[in-house]
Image 1 (spheres, rainbow, N blue to C red):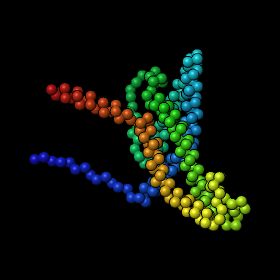
Image 2: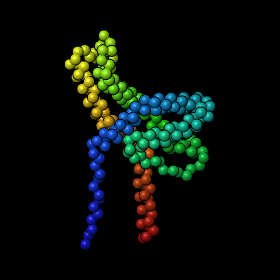
Image 3: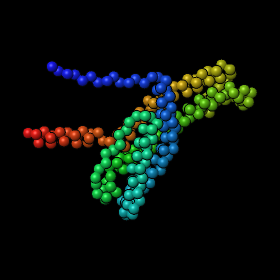
Length: 225
């Protein structure tokens, strides 16, 4: 007689709850405008220290604390992504290693440094794009409240698309409303890139975990034989 294990069905999240949770993803993209600046500054300092190391070795005094700061930045980023998206990023495994290795060759710190480079590019682009679209949509929705206080020259979208006339104003207002309604769902998809980068560079290396478990299974099998 054979028994089969039936896995429980996946819990499906309703669209309204997904829409509400998506605002956390919007906030993640918007705050990336600040974290990406910090990533670029810190990465620039690390590159400068590396150049100074090759030039005369004096940059080593700066490189050690800077790489440690990159590791701290990586931990903060992982918590930020988990808190705002609700998706899991397993923390990196703790390793027992000598102090000199923790200072110079810590894997998490150097992987966090690589994350800074990617986050500086992705966070800057998507962060400012999200902030621009969100601000423009909110401003457009507030236009009817201004009434006769609109400027004589009219208004424009993103500073270069003129909106003149009642029909154009109504169309722009409708587009802004639809954009605001769809933004959480779109942001949820865009932040999948942030989650993927965090799991790849800031989280636990699943490949090494599998290798470690495989080695333990082989050891137990050999011991039983």
